[in-house]
Every structure is written in C-alpha cells, then in structure tokens.
Image (cartoon, rainbow, N blue to C red; front, side, top):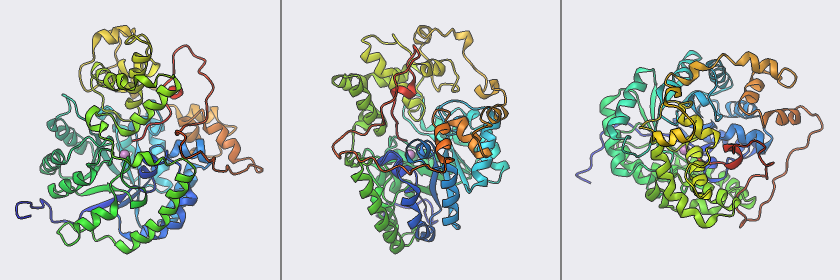
Length: 496
Ligand code: CO
C-alpha cells in the first residue's frame, strides 16, 4: 500500500441508485412506489449525498406498466425522504422522451421537477453536444436546482481523455455545479478511470461525480481507482439490487474505505436494515419475471464489442422477433461499423437504439443501408445535434440527405414554443401542468393512463407473473402501419 496514495483526503460521497438505476438496469424499471416507501425513513438516515430516484425510464414505466402517476411518485418520495437530496436523470433537450422538445417544454419540465421535490438534475446528451444541455442547465439554475452536467463516456478514435477534459471545462463554464462522468456501458476501465479523474480534478473546480455499472465486472475496481484519484461522489446500489447490469454495491465500497481518509462514514447498520427490505423487493421482482437472474452475470462481451450490456439482451429479443437469432454475431460485428459511419455517437438512449436498430436492419435485410428507420435519418441529418466524428457521406447520401440540408445550428432553435399547443390539445384530459408534460412526452401512453387514473372505478393492475425461464418482453404491440419502421416499434427497452 505504500505506493498508493489517495489524491484527496475528503470523505467519498455516495449516491445510492436503488430507487432508479438499480431496478431500471436489473428489473426493467418495475419497482413500484409501494416497494420504496417502507424503506424511505431508513434510507433518509444513512447519510447519502443523494438518492437517485426519478427520471430516466421511471417516468415512462410508471404510466406504461405500473399505473402510477410519476409526479405523484416524486411527491410521495419527497415527503418520505425530507433530509436527503433527491436526484433525477434528464436527457437534455429530449427531457425523458426520445425526440427534441422546444425550450419552453424543457423549462417547464425542470421547473415542475424541482417544485415537486427534485434537488439535483443530472443532465446529459447522447452526442455530448453541449448546445443540447444549455436550456436544461439554465432552467435548473433558474428554479433553484443543482446542475450535474454530464459527459456521456464512450471509447472511439474521437473520444480521447483530452476530449473529455475539454468537454468538462466547457460544462463548468456553462454553469455546472457538479460534473458527472456517465459510464453507462461500463467501458471505463480502472486505470483509465484513475487517469481521467485525476486530469479532471486538476482541470475543473467543481466536484466530479462518477457513474458506472458492473456489467463487465470492473465496476468496483473503477470506483476504487477513482477514489484514489480524488473523485468526489460515486453512484452505487444497495446490495440486493447491485452488480451485474446495475451499479457496484454500496456496502462493499463503504467497507473498503472504512478507516481510510476517504471513509464514507455511512452507517452500515442502517444500510443492512434497508437491504433486508430490498431483498424482499428483489425476490418479488424475480418471482414475477421482471428480474432475470441472467443480468447478474459478468458479461465481458461489453469489453469486446463496446456495446452496453442492456443493448445486447435487447438485440437478442429483436432478432428473436424476426426469427434471425442465428445472426446475433453478425449484428454485433455490424454495430461498430454503423457507429463509425454515423460519426461515433456514444451508445446511450436514444443513440444506442438508433445504431442498434440500424445494425439489425443492415444484417437481416441482407444488404447494408437498404432501409433507414426514420430516427436514423434524423440523426444523420443532425436533428439530434452534431455527431462527434465525421459521418460517412456515402451512407448519408443513401439515406437521401444532401450535405447542404444537414442541420448545423442548435436543433432546438428550429422549434417554436410548444407548451401552449400541448395545453390546448390536451385541455380535456390534463388536470394540471404536470399532466400536460406527461402528455407532451408520452402521447402514446399518457392519455390512456390519465383516463384510467381519473376513472373512479379503475382497478389496480395485478402483477403479471411471467415464468422465470421466459424471456423479458413487453406486451405485443400492433404492427406499425407506416412504411418506415419506427424505432419504438422495433425496440423494447434498453438500459442505461
Ligand atoms: Co446508468
């Protein structure tokens, strides 16, 4: 140990993801508010820096599968957790949806999130186009929230350490209170984590928050090396839903650092009580088939193919639906090629879905780029922002996009204010501004949900019990009517 020295002497702060990313990554975001509330008082007393509990896929999942009002969930959590900061995940100009929204919608969403109880908003953009973070950063600050501006970590010839350091400086100048390194795919290796965090600590003044998963089995080592390099905050999950596709376990890291200068000072006894509760929840999720124990295995394909673990399981289900399971490895090999043609976007929602689906199409159609889903075209046209690297112009031409029509301005500058339009459109079903936002983000799901919610005779859904061996699947959807395949029809759900 003599050679290893901590580059910080402050306690390491912990964000626990048990209420959001842990079950999003392991159990298709199926944890319900009833699973959370009994443990909130203990969680609130552990001493966490924050609890991640909202945003990401939880909003969609609440309405689509659990018949819960996501806003009501947030208010209930805030009431039950009065002392610990509550944190959410926010996709920049996409908010929690899959397309770009106008600035006034982004502003209203930040405002309502904070009013209903959120303290910290982690804002990321799939392409690391900082213009897509501008409005969310501005609005979060305007309504008194803390901004965690995020680097979507990936590996490519473009994404060097230098690239991320420069990006962090830019985000600090834009007003970030904290910089988050979001390693959604567990690609950041321990030694690289040490080097990157050390550089970031030397370059920016705001705290650095590291987020990884344990998909490829390196997560604990990543956090230990980052702790040595002086990282300020890390994301872990309480042990009952830790590891595998979720975060490394909180208790293991807390115990590891006990007695060092970076001792987290978190209460192991209280965490043990909270874990006793979530073990029961995890068991229920296993019994109903939402938590497939396979996600707990170490999956080193992530290291080989640089594809997020959740994306792999999704590809398998897409190929199964098309009866083309035998082409799995061809698709795996095609993903990096599509990614290169598209200018190396990091693979995170929604770019992971777009690149993954394009790769599946290229393989199962027997000809590359015979078909372009409309989201692929939108991405090549610049509708999601500037792609990090150079786009293959031949591919862009095949998609029918002329170079001169590619969008180079901030994509949201092309959008007129939308919130009044949504308010009018949904006047008959929206009961609040929160409802208007739910409808704006999820027009396919929210109308039915709100009708159900406001029906005094509605029945609570019972858990559909899936046989443990059955593959994870959503309810069958009607066949798409449009000529072009739609990402949402093809893709079930990726994790991130
Ligand atoms: Co994550």
